[in-house]
Image 1: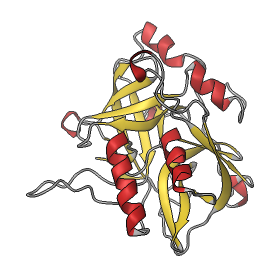
Image 2: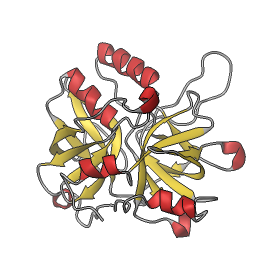
Image 3: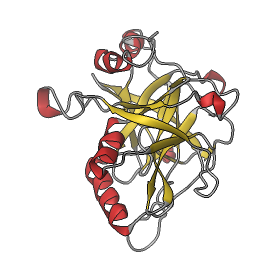
Image 4: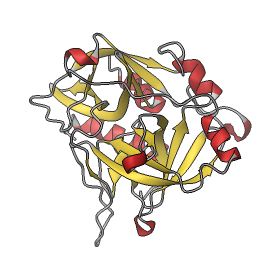
Length: 272
């Protein structure tokens, strides 16, 4: 990630550590042209283009990302936002599409226990179709209503794989001293297996010891596609939002098949 002003770097890092947002890829592979509809938001700080979080094209002009990413940009006072779908982020020659931020008005922690549904979802409405800059790009698909409850009822989630995609920090580097998370400016993907289902979340394994990859700091809002390899679909199961602090074990994604997620998305796209 390009280094913005020191003050912004410090504030962003502190915010990420408090909220534990994640979405960079651990134990994964370079994506190349595998997921051309996955991109990253870009804002300018001290004249330098800086990438921030990740997301997915879900219509010709709608880019889906995490609510806490957009909320933080708004808190910073960012008014000019762009999206890029370049597989490698180079601030000196990045291809950009301008857009407008739209945060779920219910964003925050609500419900029983305070965290049952954070409404952690947002979109960027692009000023022009993404295909104008990226010919041939196709939007990803959204899940049907209550898809994962229905799958769970028929034992269809056991062993289910998911493909996470994003830009940002990699798996932590072992060794003496504080744990470090190497940055990356390249889009990557990894494969996780199903762990648990709750009302708003899909919990996935990101444990390398069991053959799973996962996500980490630096790029929340990225998609987790249903399936992997030959079984991978274009359906985004959920948005990467949180996980364990050391990026070793879990990837917790915000479900897109719930009534609250669909209610927000219906204002911007046609739902399946």
